[in-house]
Image 1 (cartoon, rainbow over the protein chains, first blue to last red):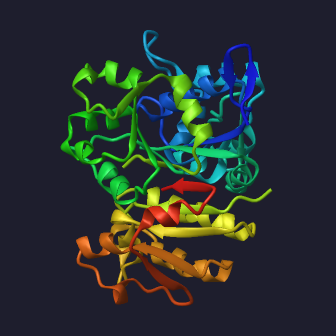
Image 2 (cartoon, helix red, strand yellow):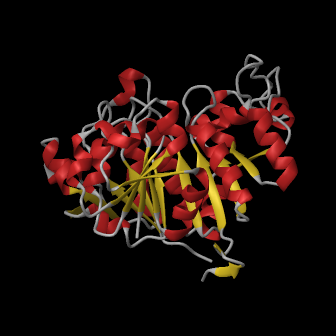
Length: 143
Length: 96
Length: 120
């Protein structure tokens, strides 16, 4: 039900989750997701979780180094995470395949680099299922 | 009612085609990213009963003239995008 | 809280990773005993085709993953009828043992019955 504040109609805050399948710089999709997330938060809605899957795991690759005059999505996700205490979850299986590892995973798999950016957590696909179960809306950003 | 979000051009991808196969009366269609090129596609003309929205940031980025779009198309900003998502469920993304 | 979920599978197998990662997400969900159904539409119906032999291209059979679905309680598979007809595929070519394939004439009406749609 809408609430009324002065002459504005304000939507009741809702709990959203986003699933992101695309790498930054490869397509527009991850940037769209970021814009949408900002608009959600500006509208007073809650983001229960952002789940990075498929090539979307590259949004958490901290050794990506885009030119200075281009958007840096990884930093933008981190800033948004800090400001709103977002739950940014990266699928561990998808991340291992594509070379995004936490310190712990790098050590366990005997790889020379750990590159999971701060503010992101590696976890299993169960976290996507959990997000579906606990959100009123889930939106997929793929392609 | 379902919100369908199409993000690929109908001239190179099945996204809009598959989406239109899955539209039912009362559903809404939102064009984002390369999906906004559907404004130039005849498929939209036949959708008299469907509310069609187009994200202004994406159509402007691409230099598309929204003035020549069918009357049934509403040009929207990101705030309205969020609102559409609260008003509809489920939300289906067509991105390939 | 529980949300009735539909996985919308539109990707052909092998050419991209999306079909496989989609089915993996579905299996993970089913393993957690969440209600999840599958709708194969567009090129997604090619995932179901029998006689897949992807060994020579260095890939694991996706159909093997699909065959695991009934073991996780997913026993009904929805398939878009017009996608099938457009591609000249017969229903007998897309059967999965232990699962019932239901041809859907109006996929939109099926989609509308769910609270959440995961697109793959």
